[in-house]
Image (cartoon, rainbow, N blue to C red):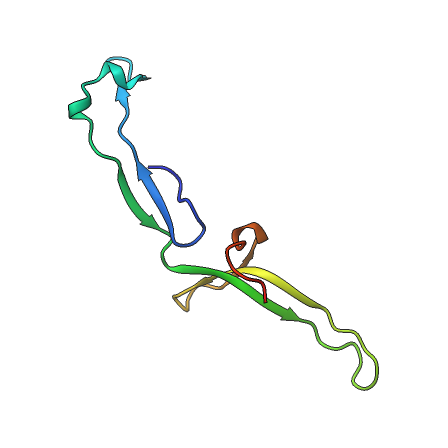
Length: 100
């Protein structure tokens, strides 16, 4: 099986390879009968989470008047089960999502 294609909602692929029986070395497909080659097999993986943008705001630096507040927008991996904590992941995992 390949590694999961995404942190969330990914796929794994199992591809048949032609293997020399004695050495267990992968060889060219032309050495095996093509009619006997199994189809590729796909399986969903990391299905219990979703990726999305989340806004994090710091407290204001003062109670009254001009203060500072930091706002960060992060890509977050959220789990559907409550027993797993969401975590910040690299931003390249969320390009398909619009930053708000």
